[in-house]
Image 1 (cartoon, one colour):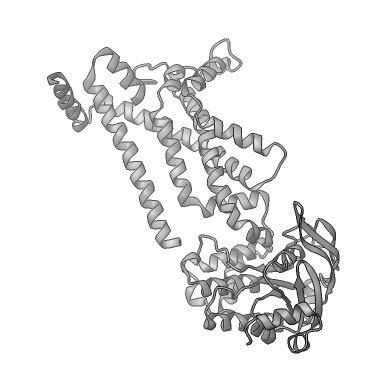
Image 2: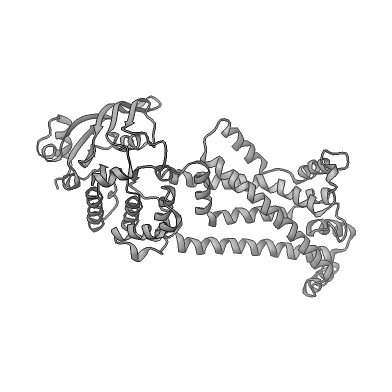
Length: 246
Length: 234
């Protein structure tokens, strides 16, 4: 696992160090002084009530937002070459192209030679079970299929880190199961998973460690098993009581 | 009223018989406006998309200016191009005043801001939806503008046709820089204006039918393209 990553990327992106990161809009502070280090390996689940700042934290890590204070620093700079991190959003954005076209678009941005685009794209579609839809327009696929396509797009890129923002929030149980299977496979293939979820069952199934956010602060960080059984902070205990049991 | 119905009948005959003079005028009109649209879109579409996806100093001013140019009066464009191309003007040595080329230039200047302003709006709306995803994939600047133009191609067809509609139905600018010379720079709109004032209603009316038909067919085409694309691509 690490061997293949090392040959592709001489310097690894991880660990990611957040140092006293704050983010605010106007006078409103959304993230208040979060410090944490994300290491390669364990699947990190970010939990917390609505408005805790989970999605914003994910965007700060991925570089879609710039912190208003503190720093977000990768082990090695990403400045040269294609991105080695990727993100899957709650509502996937598909281009008006075929399913395959959406994957090859991302591959082309990642610098894959033209003659290899189709083959690699089809291979990625196969891993998520969408090869039969390769030539279909992406935007007319169902919600679950579009999210699988978003994961195929990510899969094709072999990112070192994958951020997911509630990828199954709008999906039925069958699609959710399928998405979770793909995420597990990505992890097994060596990709670091950092995922925001609302679903405690999902956090239990997919998570190795939990980052619990409350009102923009990192209140608790613990192994998933321990956190879900015996949270240490009062906020986390209240949150777990309020959520539906899995 | 009788005179009108007589003229109407004659106009129908002219169109039905594909009167050579009429055909020549129609083709010149289409040729000039098509070339103008080609240039207008080659500049206007990328310009609109780039303004939509990039943040830069003075962006708001540029947008306000561009939107203001939507109402650019064609006679003013005609006047400016005339002054530029006239013998004493800075581009007088080109010697293209009162030629179809001058008319293309005037129409292209007229519709470039139209195409740019309308496409900026369409691309900016879509950019809200695409921004995070494209940035996440590492697409920025020119690449993002190109991606959005291609992704919105069916919506942009309407804008291209709006540009063509404005060009082909415009009379002020082409009258000034073309001079309405018979057989050389006489297009549908200038002919209609001239023939009406001369009292030759059949030719004016016949051209009016054709102009109306062209605009209607184009709009129907744009509608169908958009509808079919929506079904196929979502």
